[in-house]
Length: 531
Image (cartoon, rainbow, N blue to C red; front, side, top):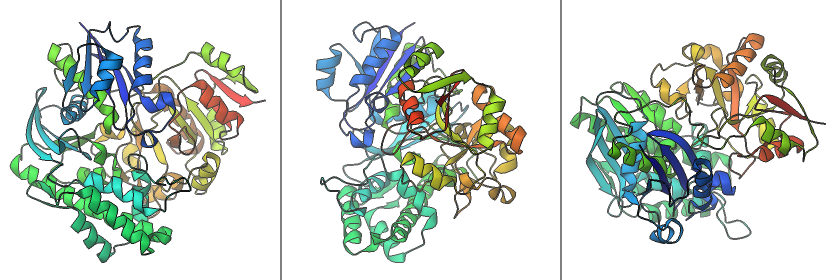
């Protein structure tokens, strides 16, 4: 059996991964260590994440059995930092491997990858069955268009440059802000038609080419015309971009279904599928039995995809798709390590009693939650979260003030598995909902009960299903809150302030406590509060 490092870098979302004997041990995104959001650090390399993986594994990069890369990691990094033979796998193949081999899906699976552009392709389609993948379609981004690039490059023109000449909204960082505004917008025929000129679709091809230039020109022209001078204008633009995206991707999937009608399960990856509203539309298709969205759907997932491909090649794992209990593959800290860190802060420690902290949440306190290894991918999923009761409609404003955020995306509900069907409409793809990668319609009787986690315009939510077997401590705090409130839901938002990555260390968490961002901090088996 073998030890494998998987690496990716050179564009955005650099990461390093460690697999041992076919088991995923650690997945570390560069931004979690260097504390610079990947969208603010384009062309980054996995320097600190590789060092972290070396420390976790106890193996130097020269000592590990295999080192794998997803293209297009620069050769200079391999020559200067890695300094050994490596296995290199195609960008989209790594996306596909991450999605398919963690989907847990049996039988025939259609794996679809759509991003802003890999080494050569912007979209690929893979027929997968019994642990094998076969590419059956690819589209060169150099000669075609890609909807993912539209989302990335329209951001640059929406706002004037800041005082330092930088974009205010940036690609690979702020697409979610735009998507979050879409339900509040309205149809605008002029904008809709302009977007259809930027990107269109027919017969498995997206066109025209030069998506980047056309998307940038459109958004800059609209800004100069004053279209983006109001929040409603930006919301209207977002609404029409979301509409165009859903229309052409659904048509694309229908065409694939016509070609491969026996494939009724879909696994997806690539940056486009960070769009939880689009994923909901796919899940609602009659012919789709289940959809799985790879939790690290952006390029950070490539490092794991590369390592999985090598493990599969060696016959040491991933003979068939597996299911993940969670994605808590980051660094973890013992109670003793946390206590030593706390000595540098004016805080006090008491033993964690779930029922007592549930009462504090029920009383309106904002609680930091820090357990185990931090998450892999963009979502806070029960390791580095902020927990709040979901019943107060003012919570969105209060939290944004505390965190100095300006987000319009609704906060997410974490819901006990046992009550999911009682609260939400669709009854498919619950495995992917454990990773908060898709929206669901909310049943009418629950909308007023949990307003802090419901989108006010379309009444959807982006839930995380919490299973007792998968994340028992997380499930327990929700259950204790349920016993007090009758509501098996808590609000979950990522544990970070504006423009910083989700936190990593106890020091990060304790700073949020002493600066008053959170009222108390549950970390390991203890609760910390300011003295």
